[in-house]
Image 1 (cartoon, rainbow, N blue to C red):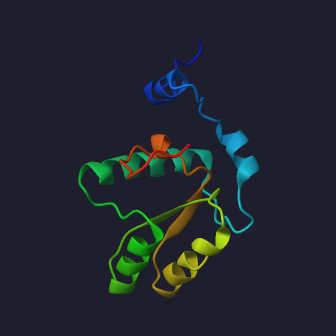
Image 2 (image 1 turned 180 degrees about the vertical axis):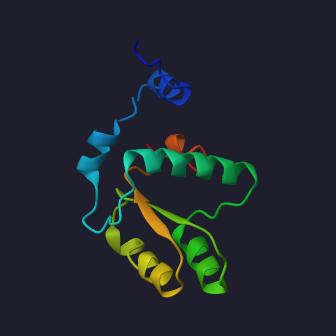
Image 3 (image 1 turned 120 degrees about the horizontal axis):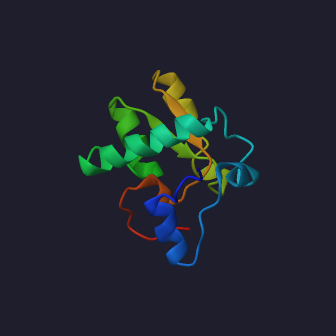
Length: 123
């Protein structure tokens, strides 16, 4: 039996921009995107991000994340592996390691897949 399309993937295709598969997203990764989450872990992280967004427990953007890391707030840092330029957020993993915070890279910065509301629409 073939798997039916996920509702979010069907919605994205209706908009005219089909979602890329995990394998296709790996082609657009930055060289610093290590440790990269596996396909299964990526799905779990997206699900966790959706739940955190519902409860307003999510921090988006480099400035906001950096501020809360400096304050000593605990949590998981999820970084997009296809963000350009790299210089914008290359210091975040170092800050996480200094404070013993877990972090991981996911292959795509697509807001639709993350399931959290954003200030602007991104592909």
